[in-house]
Image (cartoon, rainbow, N blue to C red; front, side, top):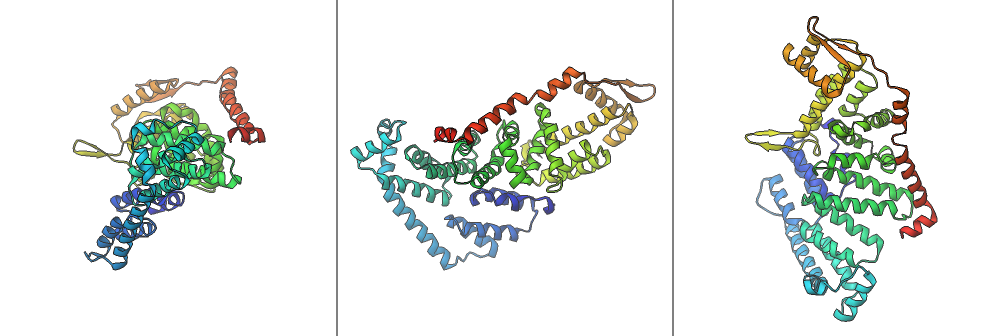
Length: 439
């Protein structure tokens, strides 16, 4: 299973605090030895201010209650630094905690800065201190406090780069607190800034999009509308380009989203095209399942890959989320994936065979003959296949249907208006006039 584990690839594009939930999942699944996971946590914690957590990990790793002196000294240093930062930001924090005073703030940031300086003697130094205090709170693991202070800082900050940094921090904090609705709002806000901001080089903008796609996995596989969200984001030309340039492994997640989302079957053809293009740079059982089924029409291979997909999903931090139902623990996405993948297999099989033996299908489905017959009836009805069941011969007879020329034209031009709009938008934003308007 570790051959399919993407944690090491994904972690390169995450804030180190976002890696902890992934390590917790791997530890729970026992994919690696506890000692390895604890050492990985210790390495991450060494560059944060979560000293108490680091002390707990040290005790677990070394099976001792004794704490090294350097860790105690580090803890004292963090407490002292936190206190000094709080004192530096105290005038502004006191102002922001007074609801009646906050009402004086306006959308005009320059007005706010001038008003704060004239009435309350709060200047750029205190605003910068608020940012440093919020950042330090985040590093200490106080994500709630950090999110609040970063939100307030952005309302006053006039430096676009520093404001963008604060938004990244706010997004990370909301993800770690599992506030998925708020996190999705911050994600969309961040995407809008990344797409419109004039970066010093296209490479930096590409890197920001790559980070955004990786961070979005936490949201899209926990938010109720996430399966639509990941498809909408990842199939946009700019982000699809980032995936194919910088993050081929994200194909696993967008492929899974397309398979489990019955309403977005129209994206399957586009997905298959991308998988074909990237088959020499990235493969895993999820992409190979679709490759076997829709490119090679290898049904035996698809069945084998489907069994491997189950293990991949169960042991993936984003896909293997467990839900407690009474006395049972289930993995909802695994169940939906297998159900829809089997439908893909048999819908494809039905479309390329004229006569299908029900007994053979029953054997492959591990069902009784009667169960298989009922299953096929439902499949034919739901998929609107032109088929008839011959109970006397025990076969399913498929009809022959052809798509007329008008439907072919409609299908070919369905996405044309959307792509034209996106192309026009890209041209406008990349022009000097468009960049000036964005600023």
